Amino acid sequence: MKLIDIDSEAKKNNKAHYSAAVVHNGIVYVSGQLPIDPKTGIPVKGGIKEQTRAVFRKLTEVLAKAGSSKERILRTTAYIPDVSLWNEVNEVYAEYFGNYKPARTVVPTTKLHFGCLIEIDAIAFIDE
Image 1: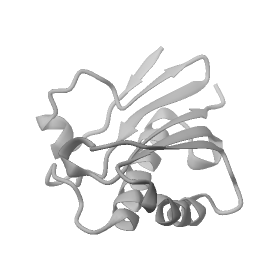
Image 2: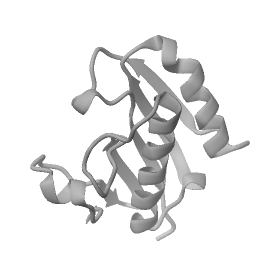
Image 3: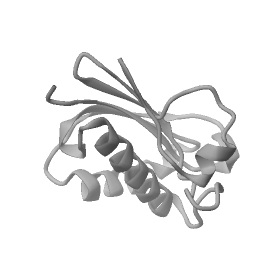
């Protein structure tokens, strides 16, 4: 088993007890990623599309550190505070993944930490 972390200002100030990802038996389990600016440690400005793109940038970074990539994502779970955001999230998913369509669940919830509009976790594979 291998624990993956990312280096950022946000991580230095994060007191939460988890790794950005865990690799086990060729599978990468990525913890929920919030749209936090790595330089400031606060949520990125803008609406749901900007925040979703920021999450995908972080997800790409974590996957790369684990030896994987977006093309190897098997499944994602996205948490949003309002189901009315679903269409915009779907647009950014299509932009990020192109023709590739991993399994996905979108979970409308109440509030997300720091007032963020989205959080995404993922499961991917690597070639070991």
